[in-house]
Length: 456
Image (tube, rainbow, N blue to C red; front, side):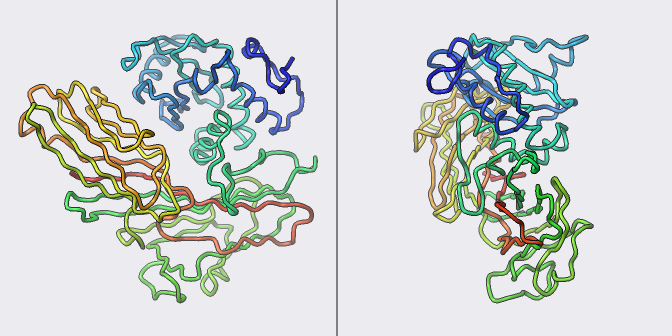
């Protein structure tokens, strides 16, 4: 039974079962999206605080915080509690106290593929609704990734994060002519015999490790990158990937007439043929069905552009005995780009008991975490060529001059869509033979922070 708008009744969402018997992942994607309604005027993103995926050893593979009502330490709390249970674990494992809201925090989980799929909530939500949502989420991820395992979740973490955004919020990210918001606009495991669209995806993924001294000098700047190919074409015998003509490996002579694109080391998949690489920077391979890493590369201490973020801090003690931290963070990306999910973690002195703040824009947020002795400053979106400011006022028991030395260094995490730190680009993507009928070719660029440290 559905409403006029095609959605399940608001009071029967917990019992809603898709009447479709098709195994088409598109159907599953739409049915998962229908669970956005849980109760009257309450969406699923309002009733769920966090979603995270853990390995069987408790390693955090995926973590998404929607409401900011519980810290990331709940991941460790959940694993300790669930592993302490004997026999089969119930799906609603335990109730613990959420310190920041003084509400009970409910953990609801399922086990699929040897992984823990967990949702937390502080509301009086129906556990059946959340369990059904988690089961459908695991089915959706399986349809996209092929199977459920720790390795595949790690390899497809960017795709899974985008799936969560699309399922929970209907979000579209990274919209451009070369990359859709998701790695696919339809499930990539659909049957080609049923008339599904042939698709191929090329992801250029880079991870940055940067250390910037208190004087603003870059002390370390390393990049590790890889080119991944996901091929879902039944009759593609050869694929040719053209890289920058100026691409150079090691300290060799610069190539071409444009800006240099250089890496220190580079390795290729054994299936890649390099007969055109030296002369034209073209990779040739016969792609197999599924995902494979075509190329891996590294660059150390020679970035072609400045690091994406600079911090200008001021730490002092005011006349009232409070610790004042003034942070000005500048984003040095090009003006038409933006960083997302920026999070700055500022270690603070022992004995910090309360925090008041003044933030330069309303979408920012901050929180004092006494257990980890840190202030967490979160910025959902940070446009290039801009700067944001924050003033943190801390009440610290027994504040002294030595306490000022306990501030920092600042750790920064972020994601840079459509950006590569090395400047590596895909010039073209050609398939042989020419694919009959409609086909899609997608290229996506993304840079993540592996370790980005700003000393104060």
